[in-house]
Length: 348
Image (tube, rainbow, N blue to C red):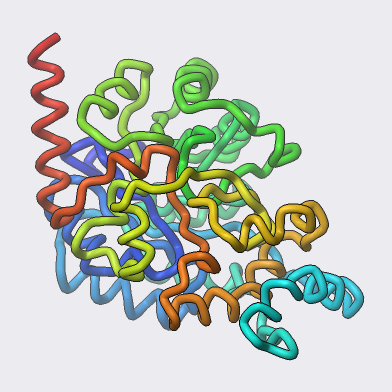
């Protein structure tokens, strides 16, 4: 089906789960000529339908949904107890005598998938795993373009083999969770400018570049390496429409600190601004349970941190280039990126 017609400006707003990507942000980006994206992985089917309806009330332009490909975890009591114990230094620092346990580990992906088919968005992207060919065929039958997220050439080839219309090649610089699903997450370490051309050379479907892209000049560099478009997350985190916690946004705009990869918050490697939580959990990190169990267990801690505005216990996902983020309305950012790209092309 291809990705032509999804955007006028070759920019996709990164789908950042956790509440920052509002329907208002998605619609503003799409209305400006780029492609807005709604992260649905943490939403119930009912919430997905409600937010998609909101987006459709705000824009007639194409938009994209994003999902985590995941099964239903069933950790044993011993595994959960061990994980709670590993988190003890953190929850005890909050004055708690126990860690509240979640009612569920994650949303039901199968139920989300059926909702996706029913809603028929113009495009959908997936991360953390890969679909089966029959699922891709169902999506195509509903008129939905399918985009896979990859961190290696092998993953890009796998998505092409099941019929994906494009892949997002995400370099190690990208903020938030790594989408690795073949091999060990620790081994998917290619930087963006090494990964992008390698994926372009390996597959015959469009490649969308992600990782460290903040300006029109960065977009031009990605396009020169063979990408058809770019996906930008951190750049949109500080836009007016993003529902980011004020303290988190202030940390991003302060430019203080550095990012690093950690799996201590969620059980899957993700890049964020280093803070006390990461340092406390550093030695325990290799032992925490995989996503989504660890993610669910740290949920109450992160919620308490948000309530008190304590950025030292928040997961402040951000890419390596967060210090170059520019706060403004999302539409203004899209226009600025388009102007910067046009100026770069004109000067060549």
